[in-house]
Length: 592
Image (tube, rainbow, N blue to C red; front, top):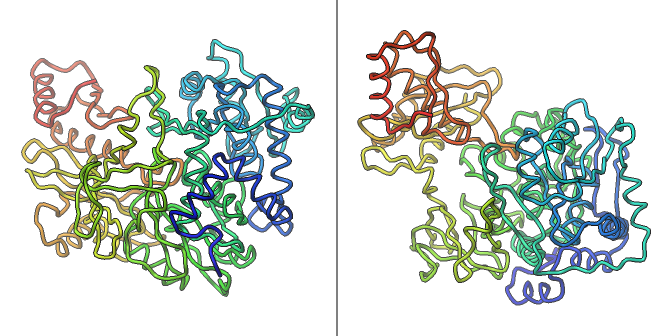
């Protein structure tokens, strides 16, 4: 079956000329296939009659919301924070908010203080938030955040069960859209803010225009090979570009059906426990999720699921271990394809086609309308080229909105990604590391993925991550963190032996291995490497100061592993303080 958007620069550019905003893309698809299901929402993991919105219904709701937000005073520069899980209202809220103002889909796990600082930076005017929920206290934290602001903010509640007495409801918001106001897209206007850092410290938000988002949607749909008949099961949250652009907006551009497996998506244990049956029941053709979500799928028994409609899996956001790819493909009998992108390019730069064919592990080819260069913007992209990845295209963001203004935007249309790569003989981009994640041991550059790939070959290992531990002699040492498959047992010593036997280069062999009950994850399901770096740093400092009996605990700053705090059982002696200062100095650490 042919693609909805051909993988061709000319065809992609032609569509982009016709539709330079997400609303324009939605209007185009709704005119082309009004009665086709746009969204299917499963309220629970066994929902026999899921909620369905056609493209005509979705467009009608989005247009009403555009008028309602404008009637409630939202202007083109006003921020609209959206704190909703994977529910249909999150989709219409996102498209309407980015059309009349600046949509800001927010991480649902933020503290009130972090929310307040980000609301302020986003110039929040209207907040759309989920109502009370037994598993998520989002509404309570949003109320606390608004109390910390020095400006007035309107609030709309989307009830997922019980509602808050007196709250302005979703139905009332839609009713406010019964006006004669005309709302049209402004392609070059700032349209969305996406958080790119951790959850603490000064906020840094990537600013994307309507034009950026429409371009990325077309580019992703074209490169990944969406078909008119596709039914894509996605568990990626909409506060991440992987969920909001690579899946949602690209799907709308192509006219596919997007399916949300409950509000919690693929983070819902009930969904994972019956995942393969769910694929059959929903007649899914593709499944989208980050590698950690794929790993969770492998723990679910396939049983008698036929997977007859399934064409494959689409993943990105973090490196795909070869062993995980093998496991998924072995269990399902279907291929895993990858995409590569960053928040700064609205989530897409290169991609493999989800065409049902098997692909090697790599990021794929540059997508239509995208320029990729190795080592600098004036360099080529041809087989054998290596270096840092630089990119340019209509999806490249405006810059980071910070408390000090817009920073870090493109230079002559180009941005550096911080990723290190090489071009294969077939013209694909293969990532070989990230400049900030490379472990430098006595001058040797070590790619964490080398260690992780070997660790994942052990049958007891479900997830693996290698990070740098500070060392007084070598500068940094590679250490390994793993989470085990259910019921498996293995010792750290066995893991060290397993990796040491299989890694030819001695500097790359991990010094220590640590077994965790579960791997720390970011809200979108990536391994939170910064937390592992903190654990490694704390371990090393404790080991180096083990003889100081006055020391109680060592902690790292939340958003970095180079600054530490020492907590004492009692007032340390001058000699103990000097010893602690010397250890920290030798390890290149700072005392908070």
